[in-house]
Length: 479
Image 1 (spheres, rainbow, N blue to C red):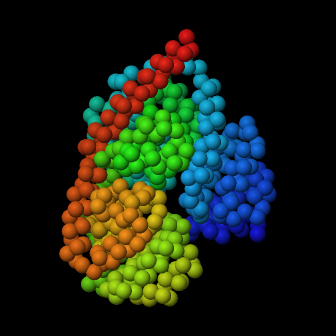
Image 2: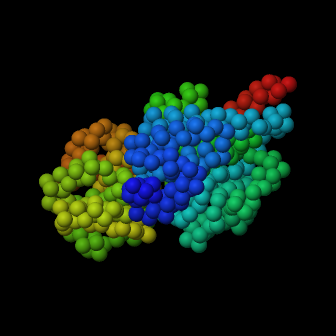
């Protein structure tokens, strides 16, 4: 099978053009020819073998590692613990060489006051308000803006801003943009963007969904205190003074160490109770009649951009069994599906299956749902947040981003436990009401934006202490 055909055979709807670009790049590098005969089990290990056989080509290696990360989301397979460890083994020496190129004795201290007053958000590519990392970057800045002592926030991104995202930016940040507190900097057009930042004394650097292999992460870690958001249960591959997410600390440290992160770096993880969320619960709900769903149905919603990867056989089969035993239930699936999977669901489930390939106003649609059923996946946090915001109940395994949005007692330990809990929720309105009340209290803490701002500033203080200690040690060593 041709390499492009192999990669595209599992492409999720909408991702084929991006996957084709990777296939073309790997063909031009000679990597595609070296991968002849691979399958999903051997794709990533053999790619890493090829990188290891060509040392000292750092830029090329980092690009291919980025491609591996993208493929794992866009077509699969998931990156296993073993593959994650090997990615670290390949990338660690590259980032060490980047750090080694800096003259430590020429670095200037960033004061605590500067770190608290000036913030630089490195956010990768900004796309649209339906792209959760892009939307989240704006929400992150909005949370920081609640601190009146902050004088400047620079959002450093790639790609030109699309009109739809600019509308969201204006709605969330308008007064702060007008006052000059927030500035967007397209680093594709301003490759010297760091010069002006450092001339003004630097500040605290935040990484929000920045590319995991971006050399800026390592470079900036020596130019100021660094705070990195982590998600998808994925380990970081570069140093930051603080890593943060919402999962409890022992869980994340154990998980990251299993994926090859050193205990020293894993210890930099901090658990946050609140984060930069934007509650859109005031949206006008979508009428069930417009969806062809009876008013008395129990609607189970599943949402995603990569459902062909996210909804594995265990999940689809379990949902089929739930629906067969619950004639009052309707499965509302939102997002692109491979044709074969969609046709099979239509044939087997009939009126109990409703598919919407694309939805602009997701909160309004999810307001018609009783239950948000999260597949067995790493991502999905944005859609789950929307669902909670409009009063849907969340059911999830105790893994990935969505797990942190559910109270610990509501997280299923196994797939059997998951479907047992889902069946009980479908069958009993009183049980759903009890879960909803508990989850809404938990959700209120997660979306408390004043608490999020204070939490982010505490991360900056912690990062500054660690950065100052590192820099002092480096300067003593250079003396």
